[in-house]
Length: 374
Image 1 (cartoon, rainbow, N blue to C red):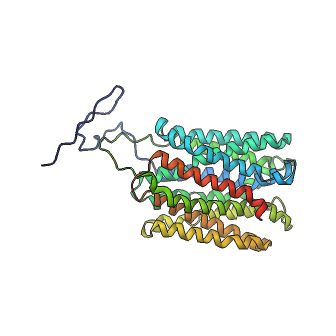
Image 2 (cartoon, rainbow, N blue to C red):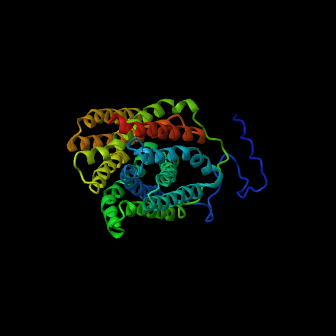
Image 3 (cartoon, rainbow, N blue to C red):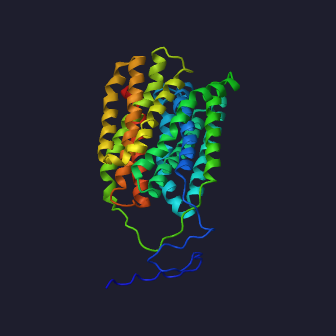
């Protein structure tokens, strides 16, 4: 005879029914709805639009405002530093205040960062530009938890992760056109329109965040939590892919300008790269769970490795090929690594924070070395 499951102990403030713990809480009209993967993808898409614009603008802003060319990549590195710093609060605020508050806070930081970058460009203040980039990066760190939210709510974590990342494709393709319109509106202030567009995109992301379904009710029966060791290998492979991608991307804008490409045209090249970052997620949303996430992560890392020698060729064609390959490799590796960490069970909030924090830390090192290596 099976031992009965102990009843849940009531506590002050518990607003759900004390029910038989062998069953889920009863459904009712007042209960929260399941979070929509489409809503997560739309919120992430607006964040990608801001990322597309900022990724092209920050290296150029650094070259324009930095006291020396050795410091030109600092604003871009500051954006990645902000993303790394946001990993832990983004993870733990989810449990403390819920998904709406966490994603809304991240989008609010992006609005403030874009606005401060506008002021920095007008006043020609390099320090303010780095601070604005830091806040934009913190917003990016929060937005990357959209993929974890989708993976945790789905029985197909690899496909759900890919579905959210796939939402960035249209945003990346629309980025150059929207940035061009924004730049024309504020001409002759170079990059000011792009910075304002990044703030506006995060404002739209904020609008999506506050409409997300509220958090699911507590389930009384315990759920299996994966051990912390389960994230080690997916984190290592993902971190290497993030290092390679950011090393190539951070050096590309200045390398393209050195090849005779106009500064305004650089937005198009970066948008092509960002589109490549998210386009592979579309087929993976349908096929991701039919392929081992380990193989997916290894395949993505292989594409990143193949892009590095192309960057050294130093021609517009090879730099473009490197940007496409490294973007696609990053996408595939990230989808594989995220699906991989859910194989042993639901990861803890600490595990998710360590995973994303490590990815962004390696991205920072890659961005800082990109100008030197390439």
